[in-house]
Length: 280
Image 1: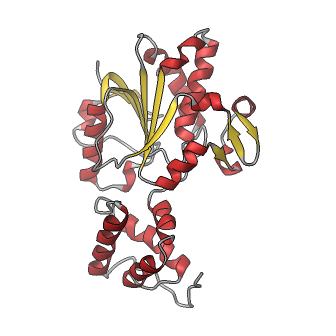
Image 2 (image 1 turned 90 degrees about the vertical axis):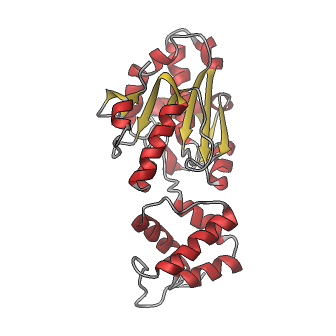
Image 3 (image 1 turned 180 degrees about the vertical axis):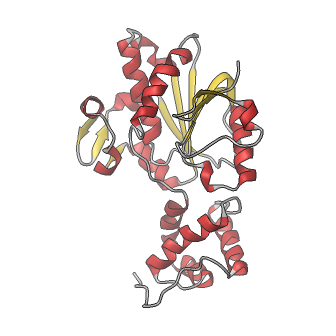
């Protein structure tokens, strides 16, 4: 691996033409559309990989991608912000258990859940574990078969890791001890028990240019939209509204907020935990 030379500087501004060429190249080679990212965020994340590989310009880095296709995997990992944990923000999951799950299981049909930007699967599997444990306490374990959780992401490596279901200590930092004992073996790596995986599937899907899921009762999209510009954020919120069945719930990240038309479309359930609902 190349080592940055003294005086190495990050391309945080300028070189607009070369950046545009690099963005088109990434989309052409890997189908990843960079056009909708906030530019400062995009520059900063590409610069992380440029620094790691000792590249001083977007043109140099583009040439490196031609020579070393494996660098694309590291770049996409960096661009897609694949940092998550099981039971991340435990208080949010407590609110979901108390304010969302009872409503989801009032009916008799399938309970469809979409984890949008699922990365390596911790969020989708947390939902599975939480729901199964809640059903067991309610004496309704037989209804677990109604649960259908779909995790989507654009990063193939993250999806492969999600399907494998093996996790480092870093993923377990917020996992309650009883859940760790109940749902995992070994450690590290911690291996997810098959029961937690029964209701969960993963697929590659681009939130912006891909077709959204439909008929969902619950959508998680936490700490994803903040990396897009305002126009794309508004588009995504409208897509999530359309993807939800009437009465369905949307869970956002702690630092995110509804903007534009979405503020009128969704009704707050728990503002502190960023839980909103499409009116029935």
